[in-house]
Image (cartoon, rainbow, N blue to C red; front, side):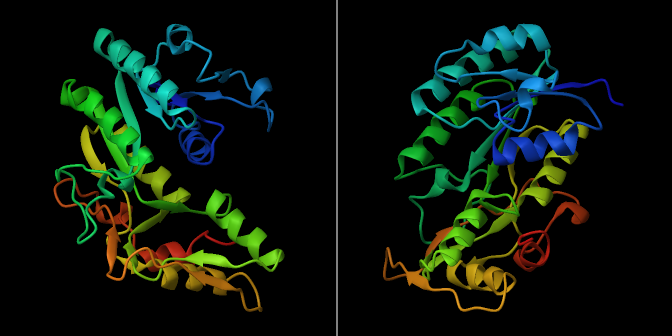
Length: 273
């Protein structure tokens, strides 16, 4: 086992927990949880952490991680404060911070896909939060940080898939956006990519999604064909009359071929169980 100590913040969430499961057999891996479900409170590698009430420095001092992976969710104000503390810690210690960001940092640019070094600009509160935290990281030495921008994430346990299954069972329509062009990923591919970046000690900005683009409605319809023999209801939502892009594609920092993926692979692999 690599003796690298990794601390995953938000390790009880969908993405954070997937990262923990991917890394825990290879590294000395710790995580934080907010709610004591799934036996996290009994796992000696996990620490209870309330983003709005607890000081992250206490856990950092206990674990003394070599790598921090932030997959935090919750109060936006509390996230900003927590990341300010994380940046302080990283600057004072031999530690690197991997931040799970989002395609939404580009949601103002609707006419084309976005690449690693394009200027960020967002119309959404969520996108602006991610930009604010990204900007904190961009002010520290590059070798101490990595920004991982992620498009929509699917997978068996993903909130999106769960919501679609619930809608279908309740005979409620599934929302699709016919004019939205995006790239996508799923939890297993994303965590393999993060494992690669951590093990190779990579820094900088990475776009971790499929290499190709698909319309949202086509992608969702293809996924739901795998669920069973019935006809789901769809609610077509048109936010614009023209095609709108929300896609993060790699140009400068491409991963090796075996870590790349396509949207069809994501449809075929592990999306619906």
